[in-house]
Image (cartoon, rainbow, N blue to C red; front, side):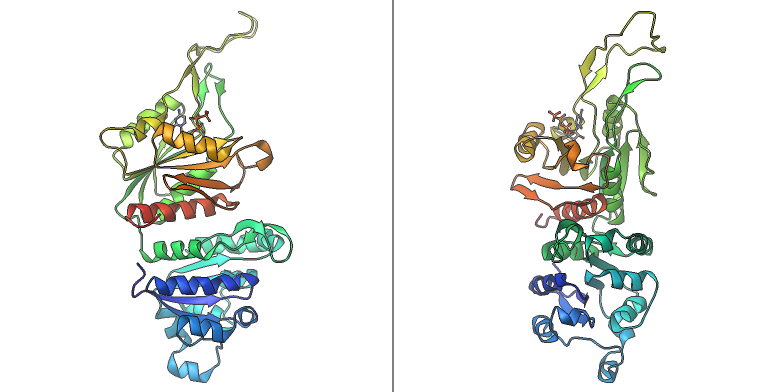
Length: 401
Ligand code: CTP
């Protein structure tokens, strides 16, 4: 799949550098040529000899090494690759990149390159959450740098939280997608997102705590991979991604008809938290408190949009993905939900209040498919979206998921 692709792999100085060795092996097995650059700090965690043996290439280490300059200058080094990958991307490397510094070989190559750059951050949780790092990450995203991870987990420093680097397999997936160059180009993908509002009267409604953050991030990640995205969203406070076709709806019934209008699509992702019921006795005028006493709300079930689309006889998208918001027995409930509704994958998560997931910035999901359950570590909703978009790209491309 990566046959003939050239990857410039910058290995930064962090304990997660050991995962770069497994990554090199996987990339080479996949047919890629990997040229390594080791930072001074990186050498403390991965020896030049190991890296060079695995890559079967020389290790580039020093900006002022004249032999290297004679063989391949840093400008050429930065341009000869199809993709530049930074593993692990330390806080220091991200800061240098965000500020355009060029005071060693790695940062100089990163500044000089005209190729796409993918980074896999790894650092202590406080360093990752520090406003300076978050500022640098936002700048780099704006500059077009792609991120894979970090995820939440136990760290070598003994702390727990976001900042742990993703696994080599996830970086390999992200590289495959990055090199496929708009892997979803020409694909039409439908995404539902946000809550629905079911009116009680013109000023009151039944809603839920969905913020639309996860669905918006998914739409953005899919668009980033070149998909034509139709984004059907219930009322939220967050802006939809620029450049996607936005269809604003309020109720579950409106969402169903917007979805039907948006088909056909190559894939459909149902991230919306659709209300299960609507109020049949909704009033056209504001219900007054003291006229008829406490009103009785009569509810009726809404059509299940995910099940309707999953079970279409004609025009069913090739890949239909649902979400399962559960509070108990997440895997068992989501597995039976997948079968009951007839979708291909279910992204299941635990939305118990103590997880802080519903309405929060992080998610911890289990991807349920016919092959079983794949539990992902806790990570930012953007990281979940990017990993999911990678899996979708690979699935639509007919590759292993
Ligand atoms: N969904 C939908 N239309 C509905 C209800 C749900 O499309 N009327 C979709 C959601 O977008 C999500 C999935 O179905 O992808 C799961 O929704 P969830 O509320 O978790 O499951 P339910 O089917 O409502 O089951 P339960 O309430 O028993 O958990």
